[in-house]
Image 1 (cartoon, helix red, strand yellow):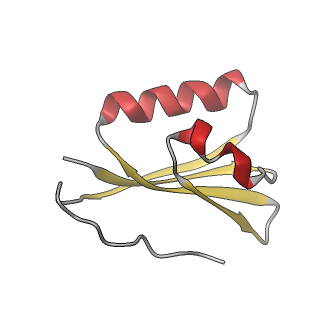
Image 2 (cartoon, helix red, strand yellow):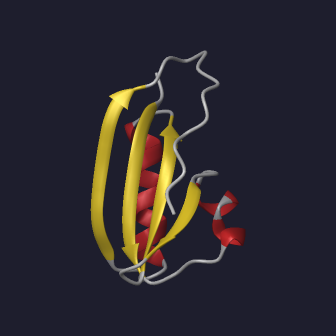
Image 3 (cartoon, one colour):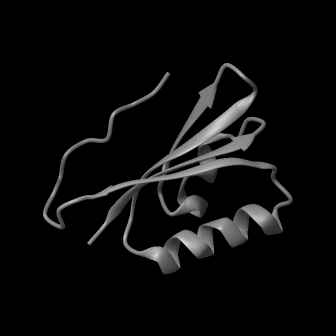
Amino acid sequence: MAEQVEIKIKGYLDQRWSDWFAGLELTHLAENATLLAGPLPDQAALHGLLERIRDLNLKLISVTCGNPLPQDSNKEIDKRS
């Protein structure tokens, strides 16, 4: 079952990186940070994503995992500005 995740990293990433980060939505935050948000299928996918962040030498600010999402959910994830 997919789980909602939010990962905050320091600096701004261009939207073209979205596919490289498992299709998560990238949102620029006021405090010179980027929020990656969306569903991930499992913990293995989360760990793989964190490895990519490490390999790119990006500064990780926070990781938040929310409630599992229903598998058949097609709900749009809240967009942050």
